[in-house]
Image 1 (cartoon, rainbow, N blue to C red):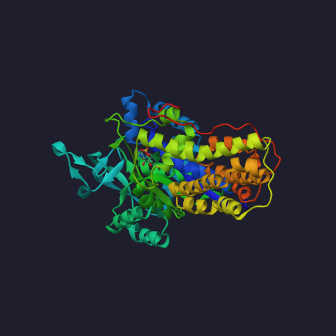
Image 2: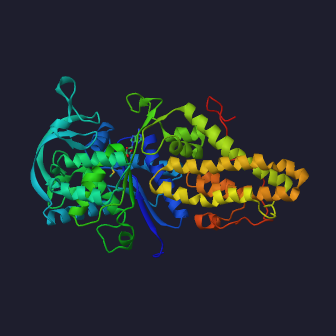
Image 3: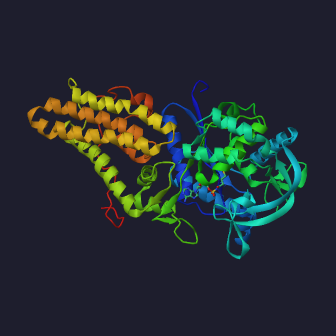
Length: 518
Ligand code: MSP
């Protein structure tokens, strides 16, 4: 185990003030695909997700629901756990910030920061947006109706004056800029990086890291009038999840620093400014990368409860199936940019990419093998240049897939796979195995063997996106479980001629315009 390469990735932990929606499903899905890919590529992966349960926003939601905060969190947190099951996510752990291990970890980090003189007691007077759980400077705000102050996110701010502990963030500007400079891929995509660099360059103010006007949070050690600021509490989950404060633990030594924190663009500043500053101040190494993805709109409109257009991922799965939903979310929009969800686009993608391109290829090849090769992996004769051109493309595909996924370009990885799907479909048309059946049956066997090998590679590489469908395809090619990884992918001619194959079945449904399966 110790010799294996490692990969630690995290989703944001989700606020339990709300039901899971497409945005939550999206962030976790991207992580799931990466986690599955890395495991198939021989890595020891740790994939963490969970729920963010403290703070004023959650306390208020519990109060509105007439429930005690803990009972409320228990109930809503369960929905996020259930979503992970329904979406087939392979997270290794699910952390809740109300767990004892996390409280211990936050208090240990706090003591470390106090001990190093990075936190001091003062008084906060300024603007706060409960919806964002964020402090804002006056010059960041716009004037709203009735003298209200509005944050750049659109959230309403309130004036807060209370005793507070402060983190000496102002002292970290230069060191953060140096860190970004030395680690050019720390923030991706690059436009997000520029945004953060100019924010830090404009000067940082010390950050209020405790609250006294409500009590739903982790008590500050040695001063129980204060609870910790919810973002300090929440960000710490990433180290709790690998054993902090036990820095001698196997999990800590193996997995920290994290390889990737996947986040939405709205929470970039917390992850790329506050978090590395907290860690460096505590003498801990910062994570290697933060990737900020874009936001979904629904049929052109911002998604919001008040517009009543929130997309429930479970409804998509019920209508379109799990794997087509997973595919669509990562294919439709270049990862990192904002994107629009529409039923028409979803149906179009499913029909053209899945049912037509990939599904047809699989169906044509498997049913010809079933009818003409005795239902067994065909024997092959000598390979012609056209054959090796296709199989080489399939075997080599793992390289661009690795490269695109290493910069979280999921859409580009799918483009690479579909280029070979297209090449395989053209090869079928050019070789005409149905003609060869009459003119040169031995050659037909070779052509079908080449296509079966190509399908094997395609199914393995598409597996992280669509695990159930690709497992069904690999079952139909009789690929053993222990060969469903990338080291066997590149083993040439891994399919053994003469292996008995099960009866072929379609893997992707086709939809008509109203969303029904045809
Ligand atoms: N609790 C904080 C994160 C703490 S991490 C230490 C939080 N939670 S959240 O539940 O509000 O949001 C979680 C994620 O969902 C964020 O990454 C956010 O960008 C994402 N999304 C929320 N709405 C979204 C869309 N409409 N589209 C895509 N992602 C969106 O923030």
